[in-house]
Length: 328
Image (tube, rainbow, N blue to C red; front, side):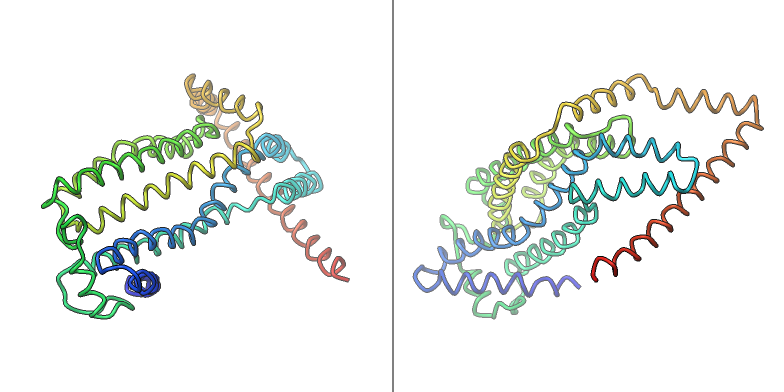
């Protein structure tokens, strides 16, 4: 299945090598091909990454108003009231141009693209004497004869510490800085009293240590060609520059108002004081003493859920009726 993703990536490599090979010798042409392969793939994916970052920030900017509307929806006692709140939520999303699905979509393109990229580089650097994707046998042979500072690009990194160490350290520094910037951006908008966002932030914080450790050990103990280390350095540098550019745009055009910071501080306070757990414990104790209250609360929740579902159907029907009218 991964071979499907190899063809577009290898095609990009072939085009760049045809260009650079017309005025440079074999080694220099292939080194620049690897660099521009990274730049090309990253440039293609950059708009999708920006889309994801932008949607995340918009979601945070919407949160104060959305929180109020969610509270109103929880207290809605009739279908008309629920429809009114749902319509306000819809209008709020339209005003902010918010679409959460767009934030997830890039993942389904980024992962296959980089899986194909790794497959091409690993196969070209491998020992099999055969074409790789759109690269002919002649291209593969030329690549394997290329060197950087006298070291074959296909040699294992662990065999050339003097050459690989600076590139590996640079790659680790670039990816660590990128993760720290992303971590800080996430910290500014995380609701700490909510389990999933908080754990995602902790996981990202852990990756600041885990990713450098993994890169270091894989480079020195795994079958990783010098080409991959070169790719890591270029890729992580581009990612860092991209992240810094996105951060600058967010600060200028999508700044966080003070209310967002206050919400974060309040969420940290609630998390530290275990306010939500205490409320659940108190409610559980109350229900234990009064099972009838628990049954009534469950029935009320079911009625409210049915009311909201009915309101969604009414709103959907209203939207469908408004559509043809607007078209006319």
